[in-house]
Amino acid sequence: MSLSSPGKALRGVFESEKTELLPLGSVPIHAQMAQHAGFGAFQLSGGVSAWWQGISDVGWLTMTEVVDLARRTARAADIPIYCDGDTGYGAPLNVQRTVLEFIDAGVAGIHIEDQREPKKSGGVAGVELVSDVEAIGRLNAACDARDKLDEDFVIVARTDGYGAAGGGLEEAIRRAQLYKAETGADVIFYEGFHTWEQAEIALKETPGPAYVVGVPMIGTRTVAEMTAMRQAVQSLPVFLPGVREVYHFMVDAIESGEATGFPEYLQKVNGDAGTKYDIGWGAMFGRPSSEEVRRIEEKYLPEDAQRDYESSAHAGETY
Image 1 (cartoon, rainbow, N blue to C red):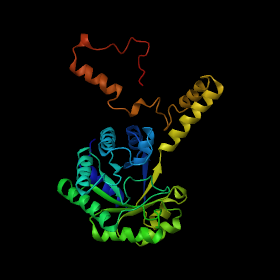
Image 2 (image 1 turned 45 degrees about the horizontal axis):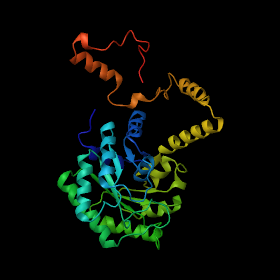
Image 3 (image 1 turned 180 degrees about the horizontal axis):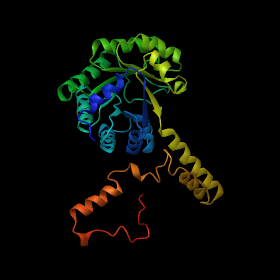
Image 4 (image 1 turned 135 degrees about the vertical axis):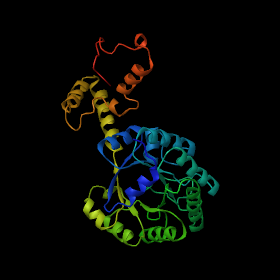
């Protein structure tokens, strides 16, 4: 299956009657996992994608590097991919190229923030905002590019007004209302809140689809409760278990000085066989699959040039 309009599919997620869970990850296989598990869309994190490349989330990566990862992620899955577009990477002209490049990459939508460059990771100290006029200019440049290139593409206006120097809840709401009134942004994204009480106030004051992100809040409200307060989507940081489990495994190995922990872990993996958690070693998420490669060989190669899959020691095994 391929998406005829990734943006239209993503709009359906944001405009759903209930809060939709949105897996937040950093690499293409996370998107493939999200699709296989049954999620309707996947969000490619800017900050975490940088971390997974060994880079801090301080605006170090260029637009072309970010889009390259987004392109590979969009190719890896058939669900819409929603990406972090940072500040748009420059002046209005640069913002328009950013939108063009993400659309060309097959991405369904991006969020653009109102931080001053170089940006900071959301929810940390030192965040500063650009003026109202500059923020509005960024968003309108993005929306004009969207309307010219792909009207379905989703533009999300993110405000860091809550955690910025001199900011707070009132400033975040003021900014969000301003962006909805003065730009063509489709969705509002509030970054860095601390409580659901703050979120409920902000969402009540925000027209159209909107959502709030705050790490202390994740998982502390049900979908029904979030739906009642008009939370459009809820980010689900799926990358964290992968980071922590890998590090735990490495620390245990260094402390023991042995590889003996692997058989124990492999036993856990094998224990999932035949259950909904069974993914083997994970190669099932890759494209093209081993089975597809074999079908292509059998279709396009003469019989005497095809590989022998049946008489090897690994006959029937796929990884």
